Length: 134
Image 1 (cartoon, helix red, strand yellow):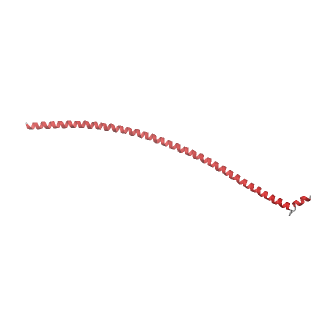
Image 2 (cartoon, helix red, strand yellow; image 1 turned 135 degrees about the horizontal axis):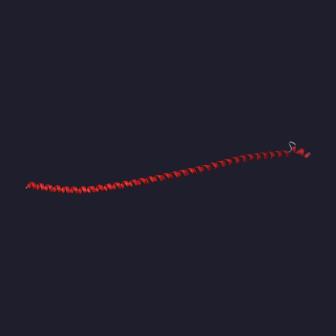
Image 3 (tube, rainbow, N blue to C red; image 1 turned 180 degrees about the vertical axis):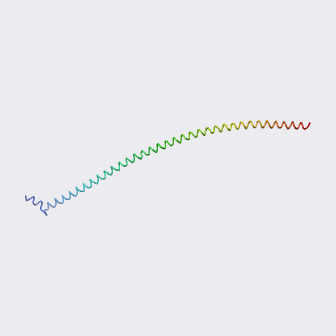
């Protein structure tokens, strides 16, 4: 019993060493607990951030696909519209070319008719001149 009394007696060097060692261990234990809690907090925060990143990547991917799909649809629509206008322009060009050909033909006919009329006029003038001279 005497040894127990000595170890718990204040001022005993063994008791002070145990208290100071015990205090340091308690301090270290509290520090480890606090660091563990902080580490766990940061792990959860990191997990949340990764989850948010994954969600944002998915949303961005979906939006990118939507934009790509919209652009492809728009390009296809514009191509179809251009083909339609090209076809209409080709038809219009053909119609105008036919009109030009018809007008050239009419011009040639009118020129031939004019030349014929000019000859007839010249002949008539010559006949009139001959008739005046008789």
